[in-house]
Amino acid sequence: MNPAPVKRGKFIVLEGIDGAGKSTHIDFIAATIRAVHAVEVLITREPGGTPLAEKIRALVLHDPMDVRAEVLMVAAARLDHVQRCIGPALDRGEWVLCDRFIDSTRAYQGGGGGVDLSWIDALHLQVCGSVIPDQVILFDLPAEIAAARRGARGGSADRFETQDVAYFERVRDVYRNRMRPNGREKTAIVNAELDVSRIQIDLEKIISSL
Ligand code: TYD
Image 1: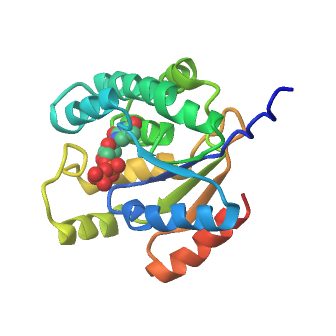
Image 2 (image 1 turned 120 degrees about the vertical axis):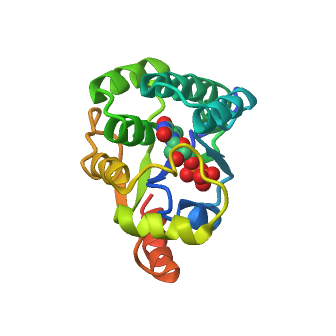
């Protein structure tokens, strides 16, 4: 007799402008998923998540390049990540919690950098058409406040973190006006201006509803 098929896991993506607080909440989200749904959770990130994609990440974050080259490089990283990491984990029945995915490309290269969104969407469909997030959690806050938080955090900034407030407002606009061409992606917007404990209450509700 064949063994019962493993139920495919869920794919959860965190999005938001730099300084919105994704890193503060990712471990809490993973722990809550494990507690509520009793599943294995794989935490990963974009660009990155595989040895090849991490090399591409270093280039995209630090080497000056045309914004269309950024799109192509994050797409190449995403292809490797989906093929070798995200897809197999979902097939094993694990849940995947990914720090950024396609909406980052739409928001940063599309909104911030001015690349045609329909080109980004078409490329994405070629790269990982069947891997669509079950839930996107957007940490939303004004660009001005995010910039102040990044300043307070200190440390060395990458090519994106040094962009001005106007750039991040455009990034935020694309996030907030996200198109859902396939209509299957669920999006929850979290008010990232609130206290950490208040945000955690919202996150628990989102995760329980999955
Ligand atoms: P981020 O995920 O915020 O990592 P850290 O917390 O280490 O700063 O940084 C990744 C950067 O990559 C972020 O500034 C946005 C950028 N990015 C794009 O521009 N396009 C993309 O498609 C992705 C996935 C990320």
